[in-house]
Image (tube, rainbow over all chains, first blue to last red; front, top):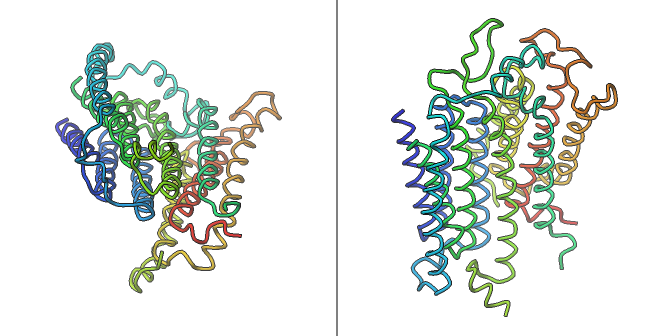
Length: 176
Length: 112
Length: 146
């Protein structure tokens, strides 16, 4: 229980460092710290599928960020500059919105079951029917490929589309 | 309860970077952090204390599993997240090649 | 991007194949153990990325890969769509899984109907997609150059 709080606090500190530091390379490393502590938390929360994916995806994200910083610049020149009036207006609106968001989400989260005892009305059916109806012993694989297969079909198509988009934006041929 | 609120705080930190920062790479980092916060919230909601991960190893074992449904939703969302982040970053590279700056307000000024 | 020193290259030659095989294992046992198409595809992409980072991005094999990888991505997605349409063609229900091939005995590699085929399709799609994203960012000098 205490270790979940520790890792969440570490994630919050690393996130604040990532968005406030002047050196962009250090900011990319701080994003890596947030992602890796998320991976460790997934192991603590009994989700090994998520932990495997999150670790490798986090390495890939940091590599892509570093490649972009090599191709652009590594100093954030906007840190410590004079704030414009539009920006101050944005921060004030953000403050109002954040207060409102915390109050509303506090009310909504009170209606959820407390931490550690989910309702599992739908998931109970999935767990009961997983082995006899689908045949796979990994319940998560049963859900993403059979009970909710259309969802996964759409997401694989979205990944394909975004990869094609990256190739179309970054390629050299046809560019003057 | 407090554990869910800390996820909300992480989400708001990411939202602050998106709203108030002027560097494009900082905005991309803010999107990443918001994504992690939402994934964490889903995984925390599905946790059941004293349960094991949802993999059947014997035919007649007791079904004392954590909630597998949020895990299935988050599993696809993680991989989609890296794809969309990469698309965002490719646009940033092209914007830097054209304007030689990452500052959003200067890009607005240069356009005229 | 240049390559790295001799020690890194030798270690990469030894380790890279094992990482690739581990990814294949994760994909093929996706319906039995934690993992599946997404996790295994990401691991295979990681092994290929390790190879490019160690050997530099000007090698002949890497140039050949960069022409074929985007096509492979489409092949993976088509396998997945084909597995989804099999149920529609044979029984009239989209994504019908169990009654076509039978469930097999549980806890065996060939069980769970169409799920292993779907896992293989997703694995190819994810591995090729993430590796081509990496190539587009890190090795852009040789990427898609006519």
